[in-house]
Image (cartoon, rainbow, N blue to C red):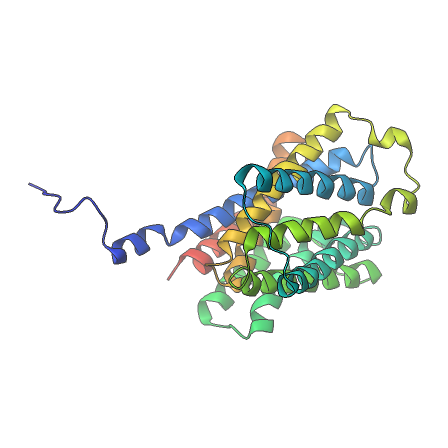
Amino acid sequence: MFVCRSSALSPHVSTQLFMPMPRLALLLTTVIWGATFPATKAALEQISPLSFLLLRFFLGTLLILLWFAVSRHRLHHDRALLMASALTTVFLFLGYILQTVGLQHTTASSSAFLTALYVIFVPLILLRIDRRVVFATAIALIGLWLLVKPSTAMNLGDLMTIGCAAAFAGHIICLERFTRQFDAPSLLVWQMVAMTVLFLPAPWWEESSASAFSPTTVLLIGLGVTGVLATAAFAVQMWAQQQVPAQQVALLFASEPAYAAWLSWYFLGETLDTQGWIGSALILLAVVIGAFGG
């Protein structure tokens, strides 16, 4: 007969039990970000891209400030934290701008594949290269190629999207360091505020009409997914990156195109052929090997 000698887990058992939690949380955030693709695609039938990003980050900022007010969490604003937030915001803003502008000059499939190249850039920049990561990254890239079927011809849009991947890699690396050094919620709120301010001129740049901002069902759903759920996912990322190495975070995020393809197939009726299913399965296999194995 089994006898429980203690109601508390030993520190070793507890650590082993909860080690996967940050990775599972990051996997959930990746599913949410995958959902932003069909939600954004539908919303962009009404509103231009940068104006939509302005609304998205403005809504996210309001929600985070509301959380600060309700939770009475102290908002830190010391110089070092603000500098760290500014640096991470630069990478995040460059990533969004280069991806959005680059998409105007390349195909959506090439953009999806090239953006995911941060899965290579992160371990290379950090010089964290081991056999398991290399093997998992190779499987992920093969899966991405099968899933999105990118064009082999290189153009200006492709080069800008590679720059976007490098910027997102820089953002992931910064978060690994700064979330362990500063108050993560404060780091998050200053990023969101800065992104909102940076996108404020968007309606004038794009000459958006007032009707583009009409609260239609499609726009509200898009903002619900990107402004509410994706902001919550961003907050979870800030927490999880205090515990998960950046190269594993990049590998987990590489599964985003797979979720985007599945959700677009289910909700938007987009085609996903056998090659796409195989590719997305390989991506998930790579995540299991690289982020959860060993």
